[in-house]
Length: 485
Image (cartoon, rainbow, N blue to C red; front, top):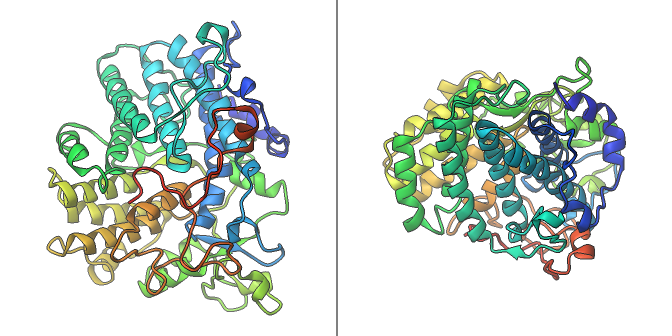
């Protein structure tokens, strides 16, 4: 049973609505009906999070990570010049809290042991994504609007570091539960079809991400945990264990959320960002012509500087490269966590903490896995000639190389993770992304910020500011999440 078949065909209506729910609606479990059942709710939660992640988080974060820029045919985008409004974030917040996390809570309370553990693992990932975008958020008091839960309609905002600490404990406990249970998750599971071993790998991989996100700011605490996890845990390591929500396009009336949302409007209007094209060109990277289509007028990959569309002399769509079908297609799956992402984490973990892995082997495997997945050729030659990982190099040099290659590998498939990790790897003294002289990112034309200043956090949604008296006021989008160095 794929509830997405009922969710996605109505995607125009779904995305056209404002989803401006009051907190009293968001914080009450809408699935308390006696007719709801855990397998169906697990399916629904996965579908709703696919909408939140790819339809909203990924789309804006692709601009922030400078994978794409607004192209000909549209006015200069407010997001591209960093002019934000709180209402822009109501939908991603609502789909995450009021739909996905609420459904998963139902599964955790009413499902069998295996279903509850899988639901908790996915919840941990969603909570982490919310923290990584918003910082302090409602957590312990969230989703407790029902009278049986205390009728908490204005949940308190909790310290992001404390939330992370609890998420690590939850991931550990749920993996342990799956290792011991004799229950089954069920074939309704869209991500792994109920395969428990894959969920264990997913849970360990999420835990590793939670730990490594803090590796630069809390190394003494997370380092020993990373070493132990690498030595004892199993992880996502190939495409069979890749965590993704499938979308089949017109075949199953089940369209990729980002594609559906854009096609419900004016269609694809994003072009290749000059920042990304410059890096791929400088590295002679064969992935350039796989991630982007060549411009019709030149037969080459042509990017546009962020926010510069109105400064071009009569720009035409044929002048620029557009994201290829790797990035933009009706049947693209929404990737939650990939083997190359995990391999980059493991390479970095060995580089920083001397784990049981081999950092160079993991780095090369990560790049190769990404080449293979998108159908690019020449990984071995690229690693031998253009991007040679030297385990004897300085920590800074290796960190910069991992950061850049991970940023490239998140393009088109995991844009939110690309933006999040660009923030983490952008550290002094090199500041590989934001350095005004040598950094990868361009300051957008007509940016409301100064030269070399970029957003590092989301505004809180207008729905929260309007209905939750505990929501922090005065958020500035250059504030930092606790792990951001």
